[in-house]
Image 1 (cartoon, helix red, strand yellow):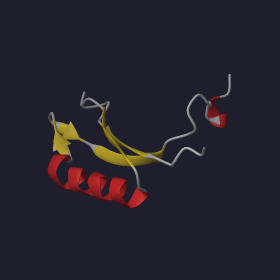
Image 2 (cartoon, one colour):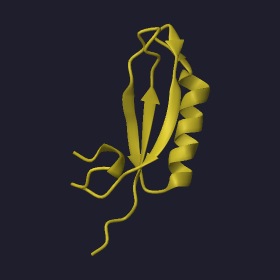
Image 3 (cartoon, helix red, strand yellow):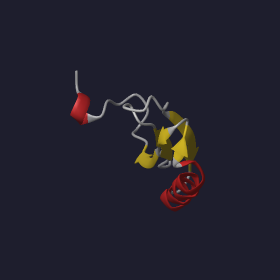
Image 4 (cartoon, one colour):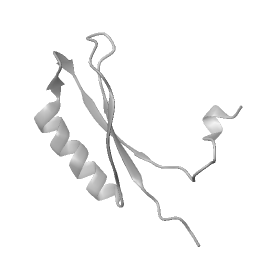
Length: 71
């Protein structure tokens, strides 16, 4: 059985400002994830005294290392 593609929304804080990063959530469609990221940016782009970026990443297959990070 194929695993459905999922999308991770991440809040990437500002390392220079000391703003924390965090996972916002995991969503079933890229469109939904992009909407959540956009809504979060509108509401939380300035948080903890610094800038925040909200990015969408497709989740890889479970247990498989991204080829960019092969050990």
